[in-house]
Length: 399
View 1 (cartoon, helix red, strand yellow):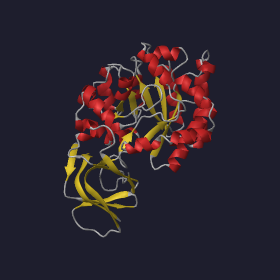
View 2: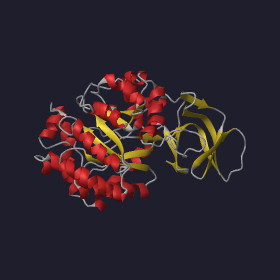
View 3: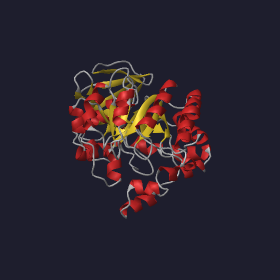
């Protein structure tokens, strides 16, 4: 048994009270990598961790990332500064397909070494669980390679990575004039093989004009569901492509982006228990102004999560506190809503709400220690300097 003592306050979402609560004058006891008891009573213990008067929160969950890539796309960042749009750059051979070309050149071992080196920065910004997508391979072998890298990182890094197959991220260059052929490859070869190898839990599709339309996305996700994958979508990022409608129809676990979503669908989204994952870092990074008004979604009864969308082309932010800052500044969200969005609701978006995202008995011992006077300082000081200890799976990480 491990005792965490000298805690200033425990801050967590409370599912029953439906609000952020502060628990004072209590200690936390850990056992078998889980939270065993939260109490002011003295229990027997073998080891003690001094919280040093910290505010304690659950570990954050980044429920939408693309961390499996090779080189940067800083040149595209410069092109956007010169006035080119994301879509224009993609149409000229940049965008996702430029990342595909570079990833295909790397063998699995080199790709693994490159990608695992990114994980510490997520961790030191407070992320303890990460949804990780493939999607820069776009061939059977290269998608398997990417998912194998996710599996190996999961085995060798303290972060928990949850794998998503995103073969339907774009049309690779060799299928530029044969989109139907690529969709058949995804449905008839990629999905069955990845299911056989048990390399992914979710299947994602970029449902957007110029990528995969409503009917194509539906076909891919229905094929994935037959093989046991849980559907999720990149939906309506640039234009209303009926992605949110499809997420509702399929009862997907999440619909992500949603800057151009049909707001009339928000009530149906809430009734279908589809989590809306908002990615304000992408809007910010691309220099756009069409931030999602999360208040409209929340007022309709939707559960809203936040994520970084970390990727080489449209968002290099790997800090959820910074995403909370952006959501409070531009997405009409309160602190409580952003806190719930990176803990309990993010856990829902990765199908882990009974295991992570709360400081609660029998939940995983994923705990952050903050040197702050108030939890409002987490997004206010949105770098990691105020985070000074982490417990992940019951193991102390002191830095």
